[in-house]
Image 1 (cartoon, one colour):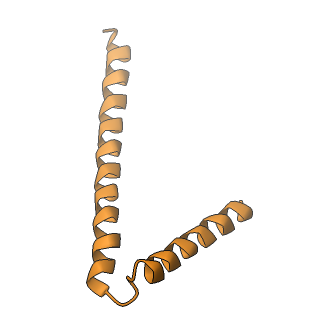
Image 2: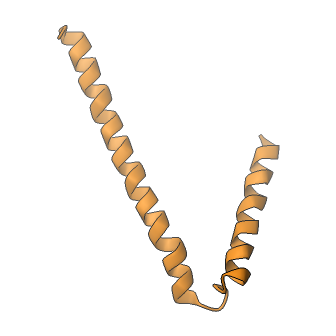
Length: 69
């Protein structure tokens, strides 16, 4: 578990440094907000929608199997 945690930490650090220097985001706060904030917000919304649909699907399957169709 520790190995995978370190791999993920270094992977995100490397990605952050690449974005900061090679994409010139280190000096541009607005661009950094647009690159990081909006995609993460969209991903969080999609995760919320997936969880909501999962709960609905599980509820309908349980209801269907309990009542016998």
